[in-house]
Length: 428
Image 1 (spheres, rainbow, N blue to C red):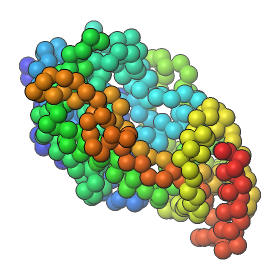
Image 2 (image 1 turned 60 degrees about the vertical axis):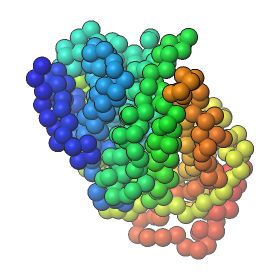
Image 3 (image 1 turned 45 degrees about the vertical axis):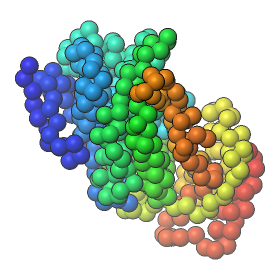
Image 4 (image 1 turned 180 degrees about the vertical axis):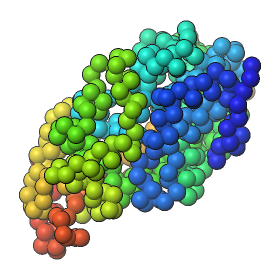
């Protein structure tokens, strides 16, 4: 079978089969060039201009390496490589930020995975390549059908130590110019095993590779603390969410694309025409628009900034987060209106951010090469025995000063803090 090579900044030369290249060459996949992996994070880390396009190719490459290490059959290798290649093809404009937009507008979660599955099912250039494997891949991506059961393939593509995390942690770290995302990739893949259990086979790692697993999960945790959760980047994300949601409500952006209901062929055809640039240009060009004002401020780097930070007890944070999503959204919106009134700005210019990051290690299995016994990573890791590192939970208030002002006065900041404390009690 013929193949093509792609030179990748992280993994070097990546070889794709002719079938994989036909997927890459499809309009839906090419659209990913215009969907930044870390939307507008280049305003904080100038090098962070990489896209979902190269991440998906990197994930496919790692799926092939991992499948080869595990000794999977050729059909299994083809399937998991293809699943890895298309796993993020459904990401909307602004990648993970787009997921928050979908959640706010639809009340649903894991929307981009459902859209990825719809593209696999209905986008003819991809469907024609995948053939009979298309539905198998769609179920794997959405956790339906065979995807409801834990398996080697599911662990590889959407597990706690999967190829998605292996690639994006290294890739994001590289392009942001930081070292927080480094881990021993070669050892991690070498340690991969297949655990055979009464419930079926799944991915595991040899006990001798437990430090490599810890390295991946710690690298991801540090990236969340230092890059993904960077206070300026959080402000940028809040502005993007505010702008797009408002743009949909104002009729500037198509509701069918940004608040999808029927994920059919017609939706897919319209959806793949939207990327970061088109969305920003549409909003920035809209006069007398709240969404347009927000985007124009963003493009001028007039950003929402963290003006108040309140540490909260973990139990208090858990109590709030356990509330039904719709209830929490309404209470948070009311709290933001209260703070906005104190700040003297449009509520659209205020956002409350809950920060309670934790390193996740669920469903990571460890195999003892000497005894053959299978254990849970969290029971065997010295670092993750209690669930992993966890800093104090906090609530931050982000706000954008009114037009013509670069900062809030000391008196206004004091009023914002008082309003934030009152608002926090109403939510918790």
